[in-house]
Amino acid sequence: MGVKFDKWKNTLKTIWKCRVQYAFLLPYALIFTIFFVLPVIISIVYSFTYYNVLNPPEFIGLQNYINLLLADDVFLISVKNTFVLAVITGPLGYIMSFMFAWLIHELPRFLKTIFVLIFFAPSIGVNTFMLFGTLFSSDSYGWVNAYLMDWSITSAPIFWLTDPTYMMTVIIIVVLWMSLGNGFLSFIAGLQTIGKDQYEAAYVDGIKNRWQELWYITLPNMKPMLLFGAVMSITSSFTVGEVANALCGFPSTDYAASTVVTHLTDYGSLRFDMGYASAIASLLFLVMILAKKAIVTMLNKLGT
Amino acid sequence: MGLNMNRGVRMKIKKRKPNRSIWGDGFVLVLLVGAGWFFVLPLLYAFNSAFKPLDEIFLFPPRLWVNKPTLDNFADLFVLMSKTWIPFSRYIFNTVFITVVGTLGHLLVASMAAYVLSKYDFPGSKAFFTIVVNALMFTPQVLAIPNYLVMTKLGWVNTYWAIIVPAFAAPIGLFLMKQFMEQIPDALIEAAKVDGAKELGIYFKIIMPLVKPASLTLSIFSILNLWNTRASNFIYDEELKTLPYALSQIVTGGQIARAGVSAAVTLFILIVPLMFFISAQSSIIETMASSGIKE
Image (tube, rainbow over all chains, first blue to last red; front, side, top):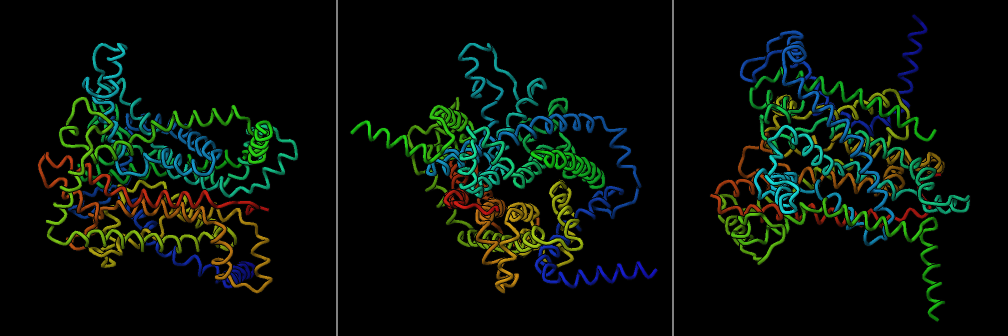
């Protein structure tokens, strides 16, 4: 009993000693708790209820989760599609972000800004992906079809956005195209903070080419940004939804372009079953946290 | 003479980048220019469409480049703007206010928290940071209703605060700042303390100047987000509506002839973020880390 009390007293003492630090954290902690933590908790609570927005939520235990996993065929298609998107666009988008940031960093100063703008262009406007609606339009006037037919590769227009054979491929291309976003910008800024003297010292130490430089100096220095970029990649690759709905329509042919997030939007915004939508969000939340944990472990092993 | 100059040029190149071959540099440039076309398409499309006359907008097959550029779309847009109920400048003011206050507040609140989280270990600090990063992973679509409940309880519905204050604590900003501050050597802070500096002084005079690339990047994230916010969930008064909302009303309010105006709107709304992005990026790139911030 006495030991426990001492421990408490010690903790309180440390907290008092760190009061300046807590004061720095306070404004953020307060706003974050009220506008981010609280809504997430409310939403997780909703996931155990039936809530149609009009009537007060009604507690139904695990029923939403049971229906989701055992009785919802579209959800299973959505999970499969989301998994495919995450596994392909997550790592590829991440590598592309770093590779392009690194290559742009090699350029002379006046070209750098221009190229950062060029590669970030898909993220700077709103709904830029709508452009792909024209590009992959199903008639012979769509740019891709027009070219394919012009060069006699195909004889009839391909239904890129309504034929289940091609829908996922198109979405993957568009998501990859948009993947040079926040992570990419953090890499650009991060590369700028690595001191020139480190590269000069390495040159003296006998590092011979840009690959060795990348491995021994750039990557170890970029670890914090690499972690940031990895989390950005997870959040964007697991939550593909808007792109799928905008390009392939909702519902898409045979639900072939359905993702977890389009399924969630379906229940949340169209059917007003907030409990069910919250259950989907909670499951996705759990999976993404696990994916983040796995990747943090992997990144920590890099270069040690 | 010619030979000497040649040698001089080569020396200069060698001095600039010690571990680079001309072939490698050439290959990098070719690769970037080749891939760049694919990524810059939306910008090209936005610029060209805004200056297309109506017949070119409806041209089939659609073409990227404008043939006979015209300012008609902008003239139409400005006529429509002058006809709104409320002076159009009010919408612009609303969005500028939300963007400026939201971004400055976010920068201050998030970087102060990031400073103590990255440089001190105190009870709860690690757990708090983990919660912030995990918060990035919750799908925002289902948060609309809980958020509305919170805003109603606070009485913030139909005020700017409903948009500005949550933006202060956007998890992405804290995460970014913390990752960059982690790299600042502790010795720098200890030395300042020995010289009698207080925490607030260290934060403003030592930490913030060192993470300038990060704070500019955070501002880009924040401005892109706030400038484009429609805020239609929380704001009902016409006088408080934002610029993107007002512009989309103009576009959807008319018939198909507004397609030209719509293209002009896309470019019009893009100008401010674009200008800020370019100036912020060139300022990031000018940051010469000649001695670096790492030990």
